[in-house]
Length: 389
Image (cartoon, rainbow, N blue to C red):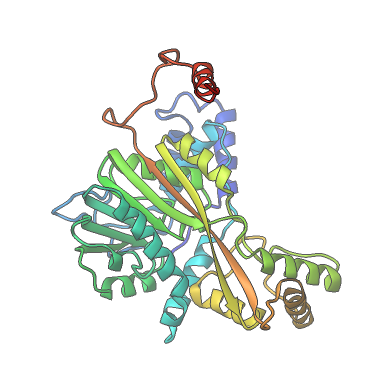
């Protein structure tokens, strides 16, 4: 498989240099046009995705049966963000995360580690069922092994698209039985290959916490939705695995004089709501939930996270964790958070989100000043009713 031969910092330097040379306003499309032309004149390797194609019945996907040219797509997205004064975060190593997920799904006992995703997928599908509507075309973004598909039926979704970055995960998703006709293909959550206004429903179950450009991803989902389309997702919140994070930090600070981020950063519920509003979603519904799983010790917890494909994939991660540091962290974990029966809890905070693409049929707030009664009148009416006669 090929990889990007132009790192993002190099692309940014090229873009800045073109702006300095005065070629920013002369090119059609602004900065993105300048850099797109600059990169397209050079030779680079591409990643071939044979399963990504245009289906004759739907015609929803952007690309045709050819090489997936990620460099130009990444360049255009990055340059648009630069022009708008935004900062495109590059926290996670997406290539490493893909390898971790492929390795986890290739294990002979991979089904033993699906308990968490199965439970969260069931809760997410239950929220989809609460919407009194039938969705003709739906997308499971970051489907993994197709956890949501087994909880859906044709009364809710007519056709389901499933996409993920890990091809080994998609093999299990393809073989998973489902009542809904499914079409599976490989795609990145940061580059959604669907045409604008082509989907009625987009779902995402525990995959967006590994996305670098979360605002850009939410905007792409918004663009792919039809008017009055719905986005329902769930991701890990900021309090996820706080016990493990604190234990490793205390132990590593004591033994090595400093600590590295061994648990990936997560999004806060307030920030997530602001991102959805900024992306253009309306009628937002946000709620949080917590799942607590008990383990015999910290070692079993870390082994299960590895089996889930949820190992740390941040660029700032420390590749080596010394044995004495791990033993100290396990002791701190058990002493600070341990249960009375000798087990340790692991908390997973879940952030559920529901957003709609605007449509004229949706209810809208009344105009300012159109009220016919005030809260003062209501209070005086209620106080008058309580007076003794």
